[in-house]
Length: 423
Image 1 (tube, rainbow, N blue to C red):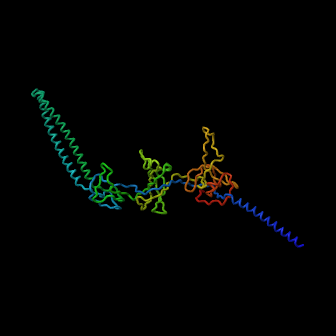
Image 2: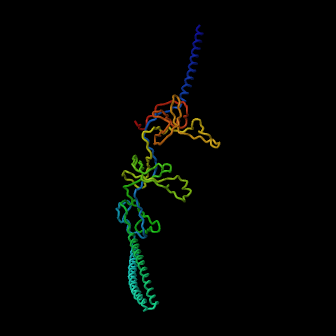
Image 3: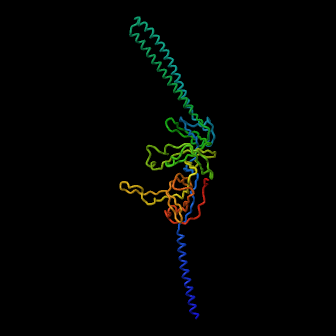
């Protein structure tokens, strides 16, 4: 009698085991299906202040710097400055050998004096010719001298007038030559045009330099005011239209880590760097860059040529609807066909539109939106969403690739706010 009982008990254990296996498989399939759902994070649409910036790289340069080149050629006989030296306006920078220019000045002075003597002689000759002409004119009227004699005196009077006029012009010409010779002599002494620092010294004592009269001349040195500095940055053609004089900027210099300096836009180039009517093909293929000057408002020991990065505040919005940048993506519009009839029998390609995904129950809804300006973290939303509406804010892969309209998702914890909300 015990064997049938054992058999029944064995069958019972086998049945229980089968039920557990079936239940376990169903549970595994349920949880596996649950695990297949996309995990997303959500955040509410809030109002924020957004400031759009344009970032550009460049160099620090003095606001005022002067390249010193001689106007006359010659040998440097005095060079009393060194690189890095502070100079005042009027201080001697370079003395060029004067002997030849002194000789030229003396020669011009002598020629001027000779011209003055020639003019005095011409004046005396004219007085004599005028007296002779008047006396013979009376005699001719009284028929006391023949006509040919009178015409000789008349002609001599006219010639004397012309000689005096020529001598006056020669005096003027000689005077101009004296002025030029003295000016050239004065230009051999070169003084500082501004208060500043000798930031670059290229010439040395005894060197022969060329003047700027007929060529570029020799660049001997550069003097700059290092207490007034500016950042000169290059900005592309897309962003330069957003830049205006007077806009605020933040400047970071590699030499001063973890510091940001305030600045103000003071000038914007009207033409791209290196642009010309006869540009080469290489230049035409390069992206146009426009130089923008930003005055540094704070004093610091900047040196010309230091590398900087500038953030220029171009546009700002107060209290606008905003969403995280990663929440905005692009998708083809629902339906996948462009609005309106095809043109000339051709079907135009469908262009993606900006969208945001919003959770609705166990799935998401794709909502087309219109965005405005943006900063480093948030997009301004012009239309498509309302304040406090929940939207999907992560993860990045789900938003950028996986999510579609009606896609089932699993909502995780609400994303913590990374910016100050406007109350």
